[in-house]
Image (cartoon, rainbow, N blue to C red; front, top):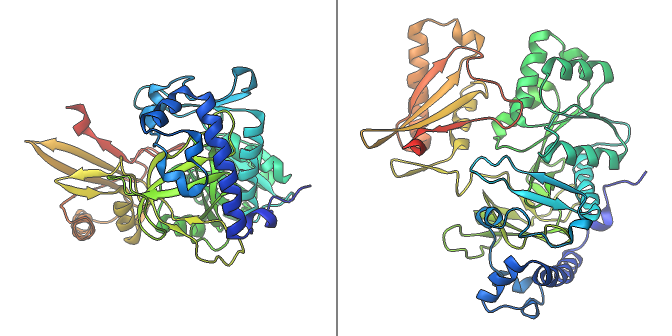
Length: 433
């Protein structure tokens, strides 16, 4: 069985990585220019031809792509191969109207699954492990990606999909699952259910690979403690391939980007200027090995920092921090930039569970912010006076973090709906006006 910790690739010198990227970028730009009229038009509007791109130093010359472009070109406008060569599609949820549909050749699927295999290996996975995949399957990329990666590693794979928590826990116990793959919010929910059933001693999990939604370091520590595992972050997006674009190693200090397949940039989200490593900005990806749906300079809207500092694991590929918010999902409340991760940090630092909702509204032309937080069973038994005091304490803590007032309402345990997919954290009622 092939080992997907590939030192010749993942520990390659920076010179070798750049050589791969230079060669593959030049070929990819020509491939896209020749086969994607939509992007060729964007290049021509900037007076560019493929000959203008000779190395990664020229990458900044290329025009950006955004999710709006993907919707405008739906369904086939960015397809770069004949339909006869396409073997699968994956798709986003389409919450704002048209879905984003991504296309894959068999070559694309093989490379994607290889990237996911690297993530599993980086989390300590081997062919002796039992990989429990409860990301959603179907159009969502989470389940198929980790499922394929697990097969590449040679692990026994449980394709559980999401939902049916009773069955999830039963299979964990009966089949000895050792690596859990799901959203962090669902991992927290599973941990809660396992604790309630008194089954923690029967669970053999050693690691979790969690992604598809934002989560904080505080939430990581809570999950690790409650499940007795090491929790690894994984990053990806349907437009680029799916999970496995980057992943954490044992150091847990950023996710290594698979630079032999993707070129990462960080830009100023307002001006589009490329920022140096170490500065916070919007993450942009260019796919240099994909055939069917190769996006050039795709703006992810995720805010992060890139680092090339030496990693103790030996991998040399650039690392990205956990996304620090989004340039488009950032809430502007009373003129102040507010990220949900700031609120979650305060709650978890104060000992509250990871189930909460942020409700933004507009009353008398003024923005309002309310944070509903589930109490633990111990807190729920407190007197009304104590609960009121805890609410006031959270109000002060949130004001210190955000710089604005947020109403806090502590609610009964299990009041806020649990999530088996992406957690619904924000309800912005201002969008209804």
